[in-house]
Length: 373
Image 1 (cartoon, one colour):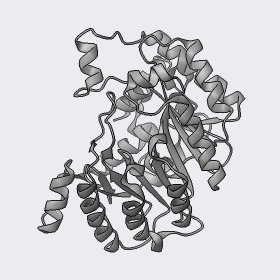
Image 2 (tube, helix red, strand yellow):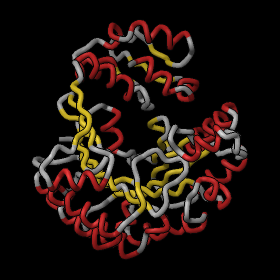
Image 3 (cartoon, rainbow, N blue to C red):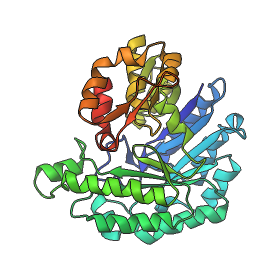
């Protein structure tokens, strides 16, 4: 098996832009939930190349529940396993960082989102800019050598110069990885409703695009190489867990709303922590959705996720991975996307034909992925 993902749905406060499944933290519910996860972990077979605990906010669980969860994973930990846990500045402590390191966690992903206090308030975050920076140094002092931070750009009324200042602060920190996301207005979020009610005016696409291009240029100069649409890493620090997704490899998802993908079968768990616990105790199915992909569907999905990477799709790799000739499978899409200037490829290179996003294509990566599907 390639990867294991564990979803912790608890937060101290849900952000207005978040459409992931999350709920307010309740100690008893969280304790029951982690006990169920611990039991599920006992039943897992084999090994994993990457483990990722995300959320929600895993660090909101506190030391006792985290220790319970992490203790069950020890048999999967080895020197070659990338083990990431997400954390937020407001719930990170020296005590928890020491627990992480003692438990084999070797990569920390910090949900900083911004260093600007006004911007953090707009997004509904409950930490401030200074505590975001302090969290990075706290992790470094504890002994973490692989630290990633998440940042968001394109907030209403934000300017390119505002964003440039944030990038400067980020690059000055002792971090190895940055995920930079453009703010999106997802349905069924308070942010979407605010925009619908005209209480806020989303930033113009041209300005958000300018910020994205600035992100790529600036971080490249600072030694953070872009390896996927929204991800930048110093040499040797690309997130292997995410790379596994982008190569459409198998993974197991534990927890409410988590998704598993094994042997072309995708399963999604119920998106309710209480119901997840109840179903497990009653020995009922935790799944609310399942689909089995045909070989051609798997191939097209592989194309749709792999094209998002900086290296693009090597035709020989694709044939070995899926059994399909990429040029034949995507002949129509290749023609349309090339005409739009979104991809570049050279079929004349017999040794290793390859297709990849153009600079314009990175701006419209979702469009390209949709076309390949």
